[in-house]
Image (cartoon, rainbow, N blue to C red; front, side, top):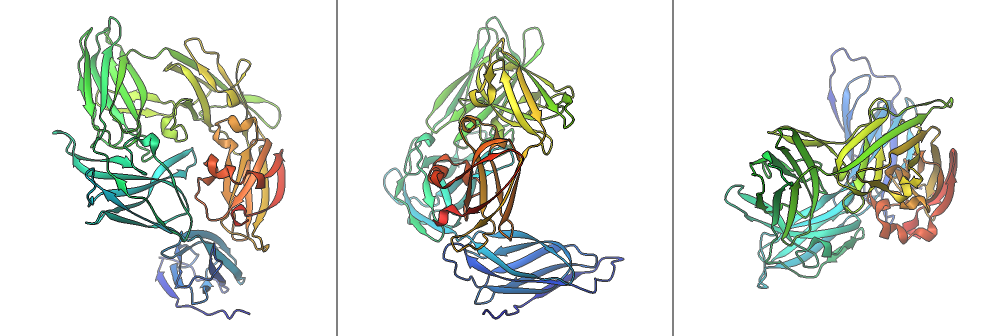
Length: 551
């Protein structure tokens, strides 16, 4: 039987003017913190409840677990408290607890996922140690709309070319090696990544590494590439046109940034004048691998304003891109209606919609969905299209091709039931945009599905903070609509509830100690497909799961 020990407790009290007296009965919490892999207790974990608001003063509780990983917090004010558990070498975890006066929370067991370490060595093109090279670990992070690539860890090489990246969560990563140096006479120094692991300047040839919690991974030596690519943009007048007051800006709305314009300090708007029958080229150093957005605004020969938004993928080697100053001819009309609970249909008004070109690899990030340009001669930006109050949206001047429906904002409890272009199922077969596109008709219905349940480990204990993912089975697995893929985390009791599920056939998975975007990684999910639980979601369902990565 464990003996519960009270740890050092610090209360920081901030008086509040006119505050009421604290309630006669307070609450308490006791529990233990364990390693999510070894199940060993973790000592010296910092436990904090920051900014707790109560009827009396505001307090912050700070304690540390004892040698057996145990913690006790006494005299906690009633209400909802976000408690954070943090220690170097582990992924921090924040858990909400509802404290009730006179009632304590017992056996609050927390499982922290250990992090890992990545080491290696970098040389210059001549094979000598490369010092002061920035080494960046890149991975995906799930967002409400899609996912984005972010920096998980950054380090620099020492005089021996050695680097060490610490506190790396379990997951799959890309490794990029860069430096800082002058790129031209006008913009000053700019950071670029000339090489990706295992050693190439072409981002498409980058290999992934897999980090498992608690491990130290030594990578093969990497030799920096000597060639660094340029992006040449060639502006061409349309037939018989004379573009005036051309303004273009290069936006970097990709894996590393939500910014539409990449930061004016890097890529400020540029003014040009191109006479009829002439063209003009501009060459730049790209700042990072990925997809750049070219936003171009100009005045046609008759003075009418024109604009285009064009994505350009840059993978490292030098490349040239032609921009013809003629608006694209593609045209798409969208109409969305909502069926109410009483059977009436009403327009789905003022809803944001996300559509992306099927050939664009970065569509999982909302920065690449079709945008409408909001332009003036001095400032350019783009905005995500929004359906009108009547449920209609007209998208002119779109590059022809096949597109995918990625996102549509619907009310809570509703779901996208249908999306058709004539007889074409736009969810599974995509959207075709041309000069004479068929309209896209979208139907939204009420009574989205709900799935509730619990997650246990192989000993039958509840697993807190496990990821539960609900992923579509064929044919809906071909659809890119993000609301078809849902993921939540279990609460302190190992319980979960997934809401707003589109009715249909799914496979349900549960993992512990994985990144938030793991369920979007097809290679990762494929390893566990035989363990996923098939389920048909209609209205409300319940199920019990076991964590898969413990089998």
